[in-house]
Image 1: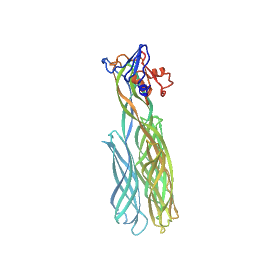
Image 2 (image 1 turned 60 degrees about the vertical axis):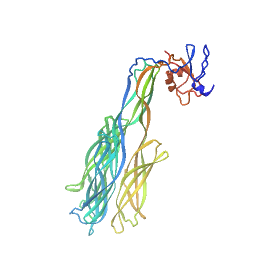
Image 3 (image 1 turned 45 degrees about the horizontal axis):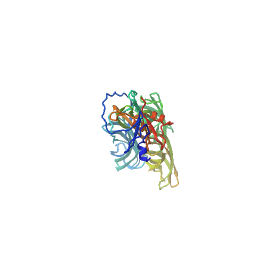
Image 4 (image 1 turned 135 degrees about the horizontal axis):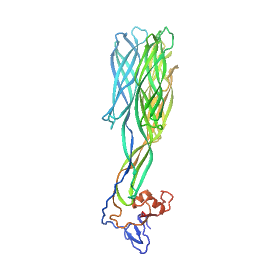
Length: 556
Protein backbone atom coordinates (compact mmCIF):
# COMPACT_ATOMS: atom_id res chain seq x y z
CA UNK A 1 0.00 0.00 0.00
CA UNK A 2 1.39 3.38 -0.95
CA UNK A 3 1.80 6.16 1.64
CA UNK A 4 -0.66 8.34 -0.32
CA UNK A 5 -3.31 5.64 -0.31
CA UNK A 6 -2.74 4.92 3.40
CA UNK A 7 -3.12 8.58 4.29
CA UNK A 8 -6.40 8.82 2.40
CA UNK A 9 -7.93 5.57 3.63
CA UNK A 10 -8.10 1.85 2.84
CA UNK A 11 -10.61 -0.46 1.25
CA UNK A 12 -12.40 -2.65 3.77
CA UNK A 13 -13.42 -6.22 2.96
CA UNK A 14 -17.17 -6.79 3.33
CA UNK A 15 -19.65 -9.24 1.72
CA UNK A 16 -19.03 -7.85 -1.77
CA UNK A 17 -15.69 -6.59 -3.11
CA UNK A 18 -15.53 -3.19 -4.83
CA UNK A 19 -12.64 -1.77 -6.85
CA UNK A 20 -11.58 1.87 -6.36
CA UNK A 21 -10.09 3.38 -9.53
CA UNK A 22 -9.49 6.82 -7.99
CA UNK A 23 -8.21 7.93 -4.57
CA UNK A 24 -10.84 8.18 -1.87
CA UNK A 25 -11.96 6.94 1.51
CA UNK A 26 -13.87 3.67 1.51
CA UNK A 27 -16.44 3.16 4.25
CA UNK A 28 -19.00 0.61 5.24
CA UNK A 29 -22.43 0.65 6.81
CA UNK A 30 -24.84 -2.28 7.23
CA UNK A 31 -22.45 -4.62 5.40
CA UNK A 32 -22.18 -2.63 2.15
CA UNK A 33 -19.12 -0.72 1.00
CA UNK A 34 -19.46 2.58 -0.84
CA UNK A 35 -17.49 5.70 -1.80
CA UNK A 36 -18.70 9.14 -0.79
CA UNK A 37 -20.19 11.07 -3.73
CA UNK A 38 -19.08 14.61 -4.40
CA UNK A 39 -22.48 16.28 -4.59
CA UNK A 40 -26.00 15.49 -3.43
CA UNK A 41 -29.23 17.32 -2.74
CA UNK A 42 -29.02 19.54 0.43
CA UNK A 43 -31.68 19.24 3.09
CA UNK A 44 -33.07 22.15 5.08
CA UNK A 45 -33.76 21.92 8.79
CA UNK A 46 -34.69 24.18 11.70
CA UNK A 47 -31.73 24.73 14.05
CA UNK A 48 -31.76 25.41 17.78
CA UNK A 49 -30.25 28.51 19.40
CA UNK A 50 -27.05 27.97 21.39
CA UNK A 51 -26.67 29.35 24.90
CA UNK A 52 -23.17 30.61 25.65
CA UNK A 53 -21.38 30.78 28.98
CA UNK A 54 -19.62 34.14 28.83
CA UNK A 55 -17.26 35.92 31.20
CA UNK A 56 -15.64 39.35 31.38
CA UNK A 57 -11.93 39.99 31.95
CA UNK A 58 -11.72 43.38 33.65
CA UNK A 59 -8.46 45.21 34.23
CA UNK A 60 -6.10 47.74 32.72
CA UNK A 61 -3.99 47.83 29.59
CA UNK A 62 -0.68 49.68 29.75
CA UNK A 63 -0.90 51.87 26.66
CA UNK A 64 2.28 53.87 27.33
CA UNK A 65 5.36 53.30 29.46
CA UNK A 66 8.23 55.66 28.76
CA UNK A 67 10.85 57.90 30.37
CA UNK A 68 10.95 61.44 28.99
CA UNK A 69 14.15 63.46 29.27
CA UNK A 70 13.90 67.19 28.74
CA UNK A 71 15.62 70.45 29.61
CA UNK A 72 14.11 73.63 30.97
CA UNK A 73 15.79 77.03 31.32
CA UNK A 74 15.03 80.19 33.27
CA UNK A 75 16.62 83.62 33.58
CA UNK A 76 16.23 85.29 36.96
CA UNK A 77 17.29 88.50 38.65
CA UNK A 78 19.13 88.33 41.97
CA UNK A 79 16.83 89.73 44.72
CA UNK A 80 17.73 93.18 46.01
CA UNK A 81 18.40 91.80 49.49
CA UNK A 82 21.18 89.54 48.16
CA UNK A 83 24.73 90.66 47.33
CA UNK A 84 26.23 90.45 43.84
CA UNK A 85 27.42 87.11 42.52
CA UNK A 86 31.14 86.45 42.19
CA UNK A 87 31.06 82.67 41.61
CA UNK A 88 28.27 80.10 41.53
CA UNK A 89 29.21 77.03 43.56
CA UNK A 90 26.29 74.61 43.25
CA UNK A 91 22.60 74.21 42.45
CA UNK A 92 20.60 71.96 44.79
CA UNK A 93 17.08 71.13 43.73
CA UNK A 94 14.17 68.77 43.51
CA UNK A 95 11.32 68.07 41.10
CA UNK A 96 7.79 67.76 42.46
CA UNK A 97 4.63 66.48 40.80
CA UNK A 98 1.82 69.01 40.33
CA UNK A 99 -0.75 67.38 38.06
CA UNK A 100 -1.60 64.61 35.59
CA UNK A 101 -4.19 64.35 32.85
CA UNK A 102 -5.38 61.54 30.55
CA UNK A 103 -7.42 61.82 27.38
CA UNK A 104 -7.53 61.79 23.57
CA UNK A 105 -4.58 59.45 23.22
CA UNK A 106 -2.28 61.71 25.21
CA UNK A 107 -0.88 61.65 28.77
CA UNK A 108 0.13 65.01 30.24
CA UNK A 109 2.28 65.54 33.34
CA UNK A 110 3.09 68.84 35.01
CA UNK A 111 5.32 69.72 37.92
CA UNK A 112 7.68 72.19 39.50
CA UNK A 113 11.45 72.26 39.95
CA UNK A 114 12.55 74.15 43.05
CA UNK A 115 16.24 74.91 43.39
CA UNK A 116 18.61 76.71 45.72
CA UNK A 117 21.52 78.42 43.94
CA UNK A 118 24.60 78.58 46.19
CA UNK A 119 27.11 81.28 45.31
CA UNK A 120 30.16 83.10 46.59
CA UNK A 121 29.32 86.83 46.96
CA UNK A 122 31.58 89.57 45.68
CA UNK A 123 33.95 90.78 48.35
CA UNK A 124 34.20 87.35 50.02
CA UNK A 125 32.37 86.04 53.05
CA UNK A 126 30.20 82.98 53.60
CA UNK A 127 28.08 81.38 50.90
CA UNK A 128 24.73 82.89 50.00
CA UNK A 129 21.74 81.29 48.31
CA UNK A 130 18.74 82.30 46.24
CA UNK A 131 15.67 80.12 45.68
CA UNK A 132 14.08 79.72 42.25
CA UNK A 133 11.09 77.84 40.88
CA UNK A 134 10.70 76.50 37.36
CA UNK A 135 7.47 74.84 36.14
CA UNK A 136 7.54 72.07 33.54
CA UNK A 137 5.04 70.15 31.41
CA UNK A 138 5.54 67.05 29.29
CA UNK A 139 3.29 64.97 27.05
CA UNK A 140 3.39 61.35 25.96
CA UNK A 141 1.47 59.75 23.11
CA UNK A 142 -0.71 56.96 24.50
CA UNK A 143 -2.89 55.39 21.77
CA UNK A 144 -6.25 54.34 23.15
CA UNK A 145 -6.04 56.46 26.31
CA UNK A 146 -9.30 58.19 27.23
CA UNK A 147 -10.42 60.42 30.07
CA UNK A 148 -11.25 57.28 32.05
CA UNK A 149 -7.57 56.28 31.97
CA UNK A 150 -5.03 56.76 34.75
CA UNK A 151 -1.61 58.37 34.41
CA UNK A 152 1.21 57.48 36.80
CA UNK A 153 4.25 59.76 36.90
CA UNK A 154 7.59 60.06 38.65
CA UNK A 155 9.60 63.22 37.89
CA UNK A 156 13.27 63.36 38.84
CA UNK A 157 15.85 66.12 38.62
CA UNK A 158 18.89 64.56 36.96
CA UNK A 159 21.07 67.65 37.27
CA UNK A 160 20.84 71.42 37.53
CA UNK A 161 23.35 74.09 36.56
CA UNK A 162 23.41 77.87 36.85
CA UNK A 163 25.56 80.50 35.16
CA UNK A 164 25.94 84.14 36.16
CA UNK A 165 25.17 86.28 33.11
CA UNK A 166 26.24 89.26 35.19
CA UNK A 167 26.54 89.85 38.95
CA UNK A 168 22.77 90.42 39.19
CA UNK A 169 21.40 87.91 36.67
CA UNK A 170 21.36 84.10 36.64
CA UNK A 171 20.65 81.60 33.85
CA UNK A 172 19.30 78.34 35.28
CA UNK A 173 19.24 75.06 33.32
CA UNK A 174 17.65 71.90 34.67
CA UNK A 175 17.72 68.40 33.19
CA UNK A 176 14.67 66.28 33.99
CA UNK A 177 13.71 62.63 33.68
CA UNK A 178 9.99 61.88 33.97
CA UNK A 179 8.72 58.30 34.12
CA UNK A 180 5.20 58.16 32.64
CA UNK A 181 2.88 55.15 32.64
CA UNK A 182 -0.60 55.40 31.11
CA UNK A 183 -3.19 52.75 31.97
CA UNK A 184 -6.56 52.36 30.26
CA UNK A 185 -9.41 50.38 31.90
CA UNK A 186 -10.64 47.59 29.64
CA UNK A 187 -13.37 44.97 29.67
CA UNK A 188 -12.77 41.98 27.42
CA UNK A 189 -15.74 39.63 26.94
CA UNK A 190 -14.74 35.99 26.49
CA UNK A 191 -16.71 32.83 25.73
CA UNK A 192 -16.06 30.02 28.21
CA UNK A 193 -18.32 27.36 26.70
CA UNK A 194 -21.77 26.34 25.45
CA UNK A 195 -24.37 25.42 28.07
CA UNK A 196 -27.08 23.65 26.05
CA UNK A 197 -25.04 21.61 23.59
CA UNK A 198 -26.10 18.06 24.51
CA UNK A 199 -29.13 17.98 22.23
CA UNK A 200 -27.07 18.98 19.18
CA UNK A 201 -24.11 16.74 20.04
CA UNK A 202 -21.83 19.67 20.77
CA UNK A 203 -18.15 18.87 21.42
CA UNK A 204 -16.07 21.59 23.05
CA UNK A 205 -12.36 22.12 23.52
CA UNK A 206 -11.53 24.55 26.32
CA UNK A 207 -8.39 26.29 27.52
CA UNK A 208 -7.96 26.30 31.30
CA UNK A 209 -5.20 28.54 32.62
CA UNK A 210 -4.51 31.89 34.23
CA UNK A 211 -3.58 35.37 33.14
CA UNK A 212 -1.41 37.81 35.09
CA UNK A 213 -3.56 40.92 34.82
CA UNK A 214 -3.13 44.52 35.96
CA UNK A 215 -6.28 44.41 38.07
CA UNK A 216 -6.21 47.82 39.77
CA UNK A 217 -4.59 51.24 39.45
CA UNK A 218 -5.27 53.52 42.37
CA UNK A 219 -3.82 56.64 43.95
CA UNK A 220 -4.18 58.50 47.23
CA UNK A 221 -2.93 61.98 48.18
CA UNK A 222 -1.97 62.44 51.82
CA UNK A 223 -0.13 64.91 54.02
CA UNK A 224 1.80 64.76 57.24
CA UNK A 225 4.04 67.03 59.26
CA UNK A 226 6.85 66.51 61.73
CA UNK A 227 9.64 68.30 63.55
CA UNK A 228 13.37 68.01 63.03
CA UNK A 229 15.74 69.11 65.78
CA UNK A 230 19.10 70.42 64.55
CA UNK A 231 22.05 69.36 66.65
CA UNK A 232 24.79 71.70 67.89
CA UNK A 233 25.32 74.67 70.13
CA UNK A 234 22.10 76.31 71.29
CA UNK A 235 23.58 79.78 70.80
CA UNK A 236 24.77 79.09 67.24
CA UNK A 237 21.87 78.21 64.97
CA UNK A 238 22.93 76.98 61.51
CA UNK A 239 21.31 78.43 58.40
CA UNK A 240 19.32 76.10 56.15
CA UNK A 241 20.70 76.47 52.62
CA UNK A 242 18.92 73.61 50.83
CA UNK A 243 16.58 70.73 51.63
CA UNK A 244 15.54 67.62 49.72
CA UNK A 245 12.88 65.03 50.59
CA UNK A 246 12.83 61.52 49.10
CA UNK A 247 9.76 59.34 49.83
CA UNK A 248 10.41 55.59 49.91
CA UNK A 249 7.69 52.93 50.17
CA UNK A 250 9.31 50.08 52.11
CA UNK A 251 6.34 47.74 52.63
CA UNK A 252 2.91 47.13 51.10
CA UNK A 253 0.29 44.46 51.76
CA UNK A 254 -3.26 43.73 50.62
CA UNK A 255 -5.81 42.75 53.24
CA UNK A 256 -9.20 42.31 51.65
CA UNK A 257 -9.95 45.48 49.70
CA UNK A 258 -7.46 47.57 51.68
CA UNK A 259 -3.86 48.23 50.71
CA UNK A 260 -1.64 49.03 53.68
CA UNK A 261 1.67 50.66 52.82
CA UNK A 262 4.45 52.01 55.01
CA UNK A 263 7.62 53.88 54.33
CA UNK A 264 9.95 56.75 55.09
CA UNK A 265 10.62 60.22 53.82
CA UNK A 266 14.37 60.81 53.86
CA UNK A 267 14.97 64.53 54.48
CA UNK A 268 18.47 65.75 53.58
CA UNK A 269 19.60 69.24 54.59
CA UNK A 270 22.59 71.37 53.66
CA UNK A 271 23.48 73.71 56.53
CA UNK A 272 25.86 76.60 57.02
CA UNK A 273 27.28 76.97 60.49
CA UNK A 274 27.73 80.31 62.21
CA UNK A 275 31.43 80.31 61.29
CA UNK A 276 30.68 79.81 57.58
CA UNK A 277 31.46 76.11 57.33
CA UNK A 278 29.11 73.66 55.61
CA UNK A 279 27.54 70.58 57.18
CA UNK A 280 24.74 68.16 56.40
CA UNK A 281 21.90 66.62 58.39
CA UNK A 282 19.63 63.71 57.52
CA UNK A 283 16.37 62.61 59.14
CA UNK A 284 13.94 59.78 58.39
CA UNK A 285 10.25 60.58 58.86
CA UNK A 286 8.01 57.47 58.89
CA UNK A 287 4.53 57.25 57.39
CA UNK A 288 1.79 54.60 57.27
CA UNK A 289 -1.33 54.78 55.12
CA UNK A 290 -4.35 52.72 53.99
CA UNK A 291 -5.72 52.84 50.45
CA UNK A 292 -8.97 51.31 49.19
CA UNK A 293 -8.47 48.83 46.31
CA UNK A 294 -11.93 47.43 45.43
CA UNK A 295 -10.61 45.29 42.54
CA UNK A 296 -7.65 43.81 44.43
CA UNK A 297 -7.25 40.46 46.13
CA UNK A 298 -5.06 39.33 48.99
CA UNK A 299 -2.92 37.29 46.59
CA UNK A 300 -2.17 40.32 44.43
CA UNK A 301 1.30 41.76 43.82
CA UNK A 302 1.54 45.43 44.79
CA UNK A 303 3.79 48.13 43.41
CA UNK A 304 3.51 51.43 45.29
CA UNK A 305 5.37 54.60 44.38
CA UNK A 306 5.10 57.68 46.58
CA UNK A 307 5.78 61.05 44.98
CA UNK A 308 6.41 64.42 46.57
CA UNK A 309 3.94 67.11 45.54
CA UNK A 310 4.95 69.85 48.00
CA UNK A 311 7.53 70.46 50.73
CA UNK A 312 7.79 73.18 53.34
CA UNK A 313 10.65 73.30 55.84
CA UNK A 314 10.85 76.37 58.08
CA UNK A 315 12.42 77.20 61.46
CA UNK A 316 10.02 77.24 64.37
CA UNK A 317 9.24 80.66 65.79
CA UNK A 318 11.00 81.06 69.11
CA UNK A 319 13.41 78.15 68.55
CA UNK A 320 15.13 78.22 65.14
CA UNK A 321 16.88 74.90 65.85
CA UNK A 322 13.48 73.23 65.49
CA UNK A 323 12.43 72.83 61.86
CA UNK A 324 8.76 72.44 61.01
CA UNK A 325 8.44 70.04 58.06
CA UNK A 326 5.16 69.77 56.13
CA UNK A 327 4.90 67.24 53.30
CA UNK A 328 2.27 66.67 50.64
CA UNK A 329 2.57 63.27 48.99
CA UNK A 330 0.81 61.18 46.36
CA UNK A 331 0.79 57.38 46.56
CA UNK A 332 0.37 55.62 43.19
CA UNK A 333 -0.40 51.89 43.33
CA UNK A 334 -0.59 49.12 40.76
CA UNK A 335 -1.96 45.69 41.70
CA UNK A 336 -1.35 42.63 39.53
CA UNK A 337 -3.45 39.50 40.10
CA UNK A 338 -3.37 35.96 38.75
CA UNK A 339 -6.82 35.48 37.27
CA UNK A 340 -8.13 32.01 36.31
CA UNK A 341 -9.25 31.99 32.68
CA UNK A 342 -11.43 29.52 30.77
CA UNK A 343 -11.74 29.98 27.00
CA UNK A 344 -13.72 28.04 24.41
CA UNK A 345 -10.99 27.28 21.88
CA UNK A 346 -12.93 25.21 19.36
CA UNK A 347 -16.37 23.65 18.94
CA UNK A 348 -18.23 21.37 16.55
CA UNK A 349 -21.39 19.30 16.44
CA UNK A 350 -21.61 15.58 15.68
CA UNK A 351 -25.05 16.07 14.17
CA UNK A 352 -24.99 19.50 12.52
CA UNK A 353 -22.70 21.71 10.56
CA UNK A 354 -21.56 24.86 12.41
CA UNK A 355 -20.46 28.38 11.60
CA UNK A 356 -17.78 29.40 14.09
CA UNK A 357 -16.17 32.82 14.52
CA UNK A 358 -12.85 32.91 16.39
CA UNK A 359 -10.43 35.55 17.59
CA UNK A 360 -7.07 35.34 19.36
CA UNK A 361 -7.17 36.41 23.02
CA UNK A 362 -4.01 37.93 24.50
CA UNK A 363 -3.10 36.69 27.98
CA UNK A 364 -0.18 37.57 30.26
CA UNK A 365 2.21 35.28 32.10
CA UNK A 366 4.11 36.26 35.26
CA UNK A 367 7.87 35.91 35.09
CA UNK A 368 9.68 37.33 38.11
CA UNK A 369 9.41 40.12 40.66
CA UNK A 370 12.66 40.92 42.41
CA UNK A 371 14.96 43.57 43.85
CA UNK A 372 18.58 43.48 42.68
CA UNK A 373 21.13 45.50 44.67
CA UNK A 374 24.27 46.88 43.07
CA UNK A 375 27.06 48.34 45.21
CA UNK A 376 29.25 51.00 43.60
CA UNK A 377 32.72 52.08 44.66
CA UNK A 378 34.52 54.61 42.49
CA UNK A 379 37.40 57.09 42.61
CA UNK A 380 36.53 60.52 41.20
CA UNK A 381 39.54 62.53 40.05
CA UNK A 382 39.67 66.18 41.07
CA UNK A 383 43.10 67.26 39.82
CA UNK A 384 43.84 68.93 43.15
CA UNK A 385 44.23 68.07 46.79
CA UNK A 386 40.97 67.58 48.69
CA UNK A 387 41.04 68.80 52.30
CA UNK A 388 37.53 67.72 53.24
CA UNK A 389 34.05 66.75 52.08
CA UNK A 390 31.22 69.19 52.76
CA UNK A 391 28.28 67.32 51.19
CA UNK A 392 27.44 64.57 48.71
CA UNK A 393 24.24 63.59 46.94
CA UNK A 394 22.97 61.35 44.15
CA UNK A 395 20.25 61.76 41.52
CA UNK A 396 18.98 58.96 39.28
CA UNK A 397 18.13 59.41 35.64
CA UNK A 398 16.80 57.14 32.91
CA UNK A 399 16.87 53.34 33.11
CA UNK A 400 17.73 51.73 29.76
CA UNK A 401 17.59 48.08 28.72
CA UNK A 402 19.61 45.97 26.31
CA UNK A 403 19.63 42.23 25.73
CA UNK A 404 22.46 39.71 25.75
CA UNK A 405 20.94 36.33 25.00
CA UNK A 406 18.78 35.23 27.91
CA UNK A 407 19.84 38.19 30.05
CA UNK A 408 18.81 41.83 30.23
CA UNK A 409 21.32 44.55 31.00
CA UNK A 410 19.60 47.26 33.04
CA UNK A 411 21.57 50.51 33.15
CA UNK A 412 20.68 53.60 35.18
CA UNK A 413 22.23 57.05 35.02
CA UNK A 414 23.71 58.02 38.41
CA UNK A 415 24.37 61.75 38.72
CA UNK A 416 26.83 62.43 41.55
CA UNK A 417 27.45 65.84 43.13
CA UNK A 418 30.23 66.33 45.69
CA UNK A 419 30.93 69.59 47.54
CA UNK A 420 34.50 69.61 48.84
CA UNK A 421 37.15 71.95 50.23
CA UNK A 422 40.22 72.58 48.08
CA UNK A 423 43.72 73.45 49.27
CA UNK A 424 42.68 77.06 49.86
CA UNK A 425 39.65 76.00 51.95
CA UNK A 426 37.33 77.16 49.17
CA UNK A 427 34.14 75.20 48.47
CA UNK A 428 34.27 73.48 45.09
CA UNK A 429 31.70 71.32 43.30
CA UNK A 430 32.42 68.07 41.44
CA UNK A 431 29.71 66.58 39.19
CA UNK A 432 29.87 63.29 37.35
CA UNK A 433 27.43 60.94 35.66
CA UNK A 434 28.17 57.27 36.28
CA UNK A 435 26.22 54.46 34.56
CA UNK A 436 25.42 51.55 36.87
CA UNK A 437 24.49 48.21 35.29
CA UNK A 438 22.58 45.24 36.66
CA UNK A 439 22.15 41.85 34.95
CA UNK A 440 18.78 40.13 35.05
CA UNK A 441 17.90 36.63 33.85
CA UNK A 442 15.00 37.24 31.49
CA UNK A 443 14.07 34.82 28.67
CA UNK A 444 13.35 36.26 25.25
CA UNK A 445 9.72 37.23 24.85
CA UNK A 446 9.50 38.63 28.37
CA UNK A 447 9.15 42.36 29.03
CA UNK A 448 10.75 43.98 32.07
CA UNK A 449 9.48 46.99 34.01
CA UNK A 450 12.28 48.45 36.13
CA UNK A 451 12.58 51.33 38.57
CA UNK A 452 15.68 52.26 40.52
CA UNK A 453 16.14 53.73 44.00
CA UNK A 454 19.04 54.66 46.26
CA UNK A 455 18.16 53.16 49.67
CA UNK A 456 20.93 54.81 51.70
CA UNK A 457 23.45 57.61 51.82
CA UNK A 458 26.28 58.44 49.46
CA UNK A 459 29.58 58.12 51.31
CA UNK A 460 32.45 60.29 50.09
CA UNK A 461 35.97 60.66 51.47
CA UNK A 462 39.22 62.31 50.33
CA UNK A 463 41.60 59.89 48.62
CA UNK A 464 44.86 60.02 46.73
CA UNK A 465 44.09 61.71 43.44
CA UNK A 466 40.54 62.71 44.24
CA UNK A 467 37.44 61.55 46.10
CA UNK A 468 36.33 57.98 46.76
CA UNK A 469 32.55 57.45 46.70
CA UNK A 470 30.46 54.47 47.78
CA UNK A 471 26.71 53.90 47.41
CA UNK A 472 24.14 51.19 46.68
CA UNK A 473 21.29 51.09 44.18
CA UNK A 474 18.20 48.86 44.18
CA UNK A 475 16.76 47.73 40.83
CA UNK A 476 13.07 46.85 41.26
CA UNK A 477 12.17 44.46 38.43
CA UNK A 478 8.93 42.88 37.20
CA UNK A 479 8.96 40.63 34.13
CA UNK A 480 5.89 39.43 32.22
CA UNK A 481 5.26 37.90 28.81
CA UNK A 482 2.21 37.84 26.58
CA UNK A 483 0.85 34.91 24.58
CA UNK A 484 -2.20 34.35 22.43
CA UNK A 485 -4.89 31.69 22.70
CA UNK A 486 -7.40 31.03 19.91
CA UNK A 487 -10.90 31.59 21.29
CA UNK A 488 -14.41 31.21 19.90
CA UNK A 489 -16.42 34.43 19.86
CA UNK A 490 -19.63 33.18 18.24
CA UNK A 491 -21.04 29.93 16.84
CA UNK A 492 -24.24 28.96 15.05
CA UNK A 493 -25.74 25.59 14.19
CA UNK A 494 -26.45 24.88 10.54
CA UNK A 495 -27.84 22.00 8.50
CA UNK A 496 -27.37 18.34 9.45
CA UNK A 497 -23.97 16.84 8.67
CA UNK A 498 -25.68 14.28 6.37
CA UNK A 499 -27.20 17.01 4.20
CA UNK A 500 -25.82 16.51 0.70
CA UNK A 501 -23.83 13.40 1.66
CA UNK A 502 -26.39 10.63 1.86
CA UNK A 503 -25.92 7.90 4.42
CA UNK A 504 -23.14 8.50 6.95
CA UNK A 505 -20.56 5.71 7.42
CA UNK A 506 -20.37 3.69 10.61
CA UNK A 507 -16.58 3.57 10.66
CA UNK A 508 -13.55 4.86 8.76
CA UNK A 509 -10.06 3.38 8.75
CA UNK A 510 -7.19 5.72 7.91
CA UNK A 511 -3.66 6.74 8.76
CA UNK A 512 -3.26 10.03 10.68
CA UNK A 513 -1.15 12.65 8.94
CA UNK A 514 1.71 14.42 10.67
CA UNK A 515 0.59 17.12 13.11
CA UNK A 516 -2.96 15.81 13.29
CA UNK A 517 -4.55 15.20 16.69
CA UNK A 518 -7.55 13.24 17.92
CA UNK A 519 -9.57 16.46 18.20
CA UNK A 520 -9.00 17.41 14.56
CA UNK A 521 -9.86 13.88 13.35
CA UNK A 522 -13.00 13.66 15.48
CA UNK A 523 -14.14 17.08 14.29
CA UNK A 524 -13.51 16.17 10.65
CA UNK A 525 -15.61 12.98 10.81
CA UNK A 526 -18.31 14.25 13.15
CA UNK A 527 -17.52 11.82 15.95
CA UNK A 528 -16.13 12.29 19.44
CA UNK A 529 -12.68 11.91 20.92
CA UNK A 530 -14.03 9.37 23.39
CA UNK A 531 -15.32 7.14 20.58
CA UNK A 532 -11.92 7.17 18.85
CA UNK A 533 -10.00 6.51 22.09
CA UNK A 534 -12.30 3.62 23.00
CA UNK A 535 -12.33 2.06 19.52
CA UNK A 536 -8.53 2.06 19.30
CA UNK A 537 -7.93 1.20 22.98
CA UNK A 538 -5.76 4.27 23.49
CA UNK A 539 -4.59 5.29 26.95
CA UNK A 540 -4.83 9.01 26.26
CA UNK A 541 -5.10 11.62 23.53
CA UNK A 542 -1.68 10.86 22.04
CA UNK A 543 -1.91 9.12 18.68
CA UNK A 544 0.28 6.11 17.83
CA UNK A 545 2.76 6.90 15.06
CA UNK A 546 2.46 5.03 11.77
CA UNK A 547 -0.58 2.98 12.75
CA UNK A 548 -4.00 2.87 11.13
CA UNK A 549 -6.74 4.52 13.15
CA UNK A 550 -10.28 3.24 13.46
CA UNK A 551 -12.71 6.19 13.37
CA UNK A 552 -16.22 5.13 14.42
CA UNK A 553 -19.28 7.25 13.92
CA UNK A 554 -21.31 8.50 16.85
CA UNK A 555 -23.51 5.80 18.30
CA UNK A 556 -27.09 6.83 18.08
